[in-house]
Image 1: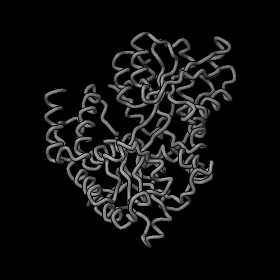
Image 2: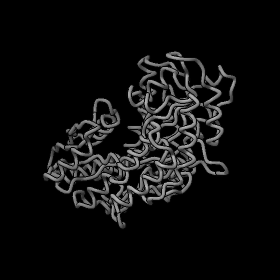
Image 3: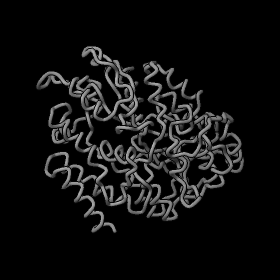
Image 4: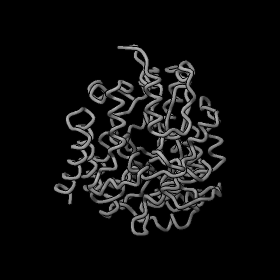
Amino acid sequence: MQGRLGQGLVSAAALALVLAACGGDNGDSASSDGGDVTLSVSVWNIEGTPEFRALFDAFEEAHPNITIKPVDILADDYDDKITAMLAGGDDTDVLTMKNVIGYSRYANRGQLMDITDMADSIDTSNLAGLDAYDIDGQYYALPYRQDFWLLYYNKGLFDEAGLDYPDHLTWDEYADLAAELTQGEGGDKVYGTYHHTWRSVIQAISAAQTGGDQLSGDYSFFADQYDMAVGLQESGATLDFGTATSQQTGYQSMFETEATAMLPMGTWYIAALLAAAESGDTDVDWGLAPMPQVPGSDDVVSFGSPTAFAVNENAKNADAAKTFVEFAASAEGAKAIAAIGVVPALQSSEITDAYFALDGMPEDELSKTAFEPDSVVLEMPVSETASDIDTILNEEHQLIMVGDKSVEDGLKTMGERVENEVR
């Protein structure tokens, strides 16, 4: 994580970590004015999302007169619920921005507090993903975590097949490797790779590596990636989309039961994988590799998305809310979530070393290299039309992957629908 992670999102290049207690002074200010404070923070599935508890515990330890009261919302309902809450004048102090599409919507509606002064007053040079929250030079949230995609692989299955680990592959090499790793039949079948059902597995990586614009209406740049993915399905080197959807196959179960040798997935899975190993639910011997690249690429390009905290425009405890937002983006916040295997937005060699020192983390150089992509492109551009276009791209993605439309017809329909339904 030596300064390359997130360069596609952040202009920062040098890493000069500021380990000062960014939230300390503000916390004193917030609490000294009003004594004890109960700060409400919206989250999703708090029991299954340990980063929230890790952050809250660290913050409360640093600010003993501020108590966090989580407002827990089902993950699948989160964006809809927050939209409804804010429309009704809800006064939850801090709002977790699950994605930048929702952030853009809330900020443009005037529902988030302008915290540009905070962004300007702290050292954000190593805060990956910050640019995603720049709206005409104003900031309404600060990121605390930065996920990006890389390639998980099962070392044991590679060793068994006598194959080298997947070091800096092209997509063609990746597809060939998947075919070589596929073995067995029926319930004992081991797939060479597993593509989860999300459209980003195909579309976002294609946009990131080709420079394609997912808002443009011209989706010809998706073609090579779809051809590769459909080809893997047809050859049986990956579980087909229809089966994965109908059986609600989880990417965790595919990898942790060794039903797949490779898995393109986001860095958020690391924390869950470490937890599964610690609890004895899996003993898979795993490693990390950079995402495969398009032919001729000299750089490692991936895609990802930051997660952030914002202050509600109607917050009851605005000062304490700002203190928490600043803490989450600081070195202290980064250390708290890195300790459980979550990739923080604030990056430094110290935090990276601590991250790879966690029990169960792979120690090989290839895995560490995977944490240094040259560029991480935002998963979906921020725009007022992004949500509507996202829906269209997802619907057409499903039709292509189940074989109801050819790749050519599906991409053509995407463009026509965006032109007719969104423009």
